[in-house]
Image (cartoon, rainbow, N blue to C red; front, side, top):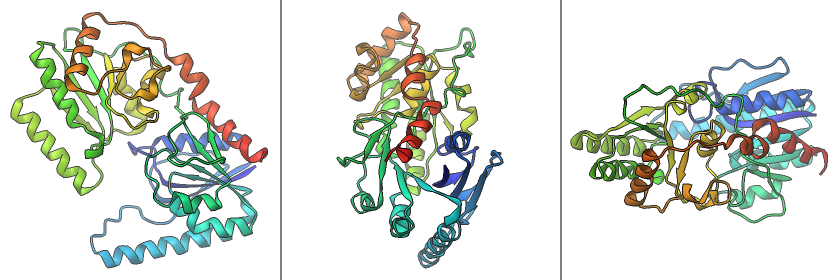
Length: 348
């Protein structure tokens, strides 16, 4: 099969989207050729049967609203030109996360008789209902990850790079406070302030600890949010550090130093950062009920700072060894995901 992949960014050093470079490589192992159209590209080293075509956003930061509209029009026209000129070089299309591209190219792909697969994991329904008209297969990692019920849905697991997220010997410094890790975008919807509240509660309980938070702000609203959080931490002298956005290949280094990984989320779907920690056999606490049956019951915590703090205290008093990796290998590994996706194209 020859595959056309549509994605936002191809850049192995990007914290949020760097993982997708490995997805592209894994697709290429199972396809005769892979053509990638991305909004912008950066650092990558890919196999010889992969070509990357950028729409040209690299490094552009335009504040003028009129210019932004013109640029979006330029990107759209370039996108349409690519999918037409490359039409003889692909048999099927895989769109990652952005329904806008399905709406732009869907009618052309239908006329060209190209199957369209769409990966999505988000609560937002914006544009999805319209895009579904042109989609043959919806790929989503778990029940609840796709917000619209459809017969086109295929639950295929999360695609964790288990070759990168390997169990490792502890990288912790003897005698230092236990490190508790969180990995999330710094944005109000992720409720990062709850980590600060948990730290306060741990201090009240007299529990030595240090929080590392991996992740970066993206929008101006996110940046203002991060500033408020930093001021709060500094004012109270809390043991909480923002690591910032880390190149994806280096993320396991930070996971490997953690005594415990926490995730305070009730999104109703599995979060890949928890699965990454599980792939490395790192103990996890989460308030996300979607993990019930995947994690032990005592790893599911009520979503209050006090409940989290008491659970963390109990764990740090009596640490346990966990063996989650085999479950991730079987159900959520990247190596298992890609054949499942391609199988849908071959057995429509």
